[in-house]
Length: 41
Image 1 (cartoon, one colour):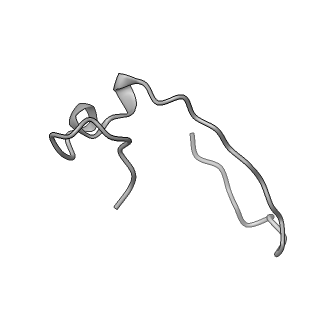
Image 2 (cartoon, helix red, strand yellow; image 1 turned 180 degrees about the horizontal axis):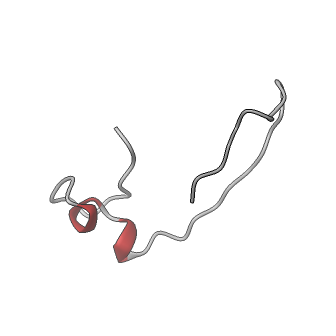
Image 3 (cartoon, rainbow, N blue to C red; image 1 turned 60 degrees about the vertical axis):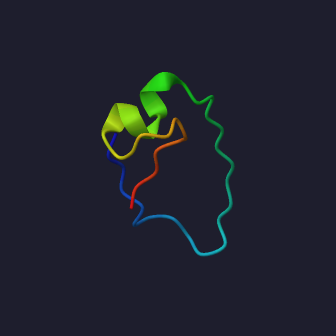
């Protein structure tokens, strides 16, 4: 999913939630061996 953030105004707030599944873990995306949430570097 690619979305433009160019139209977001300063001060805008939001909340996001994610139920972490196996597909979201570091080993699954090839970025480590510990089963934790993989995040961009």
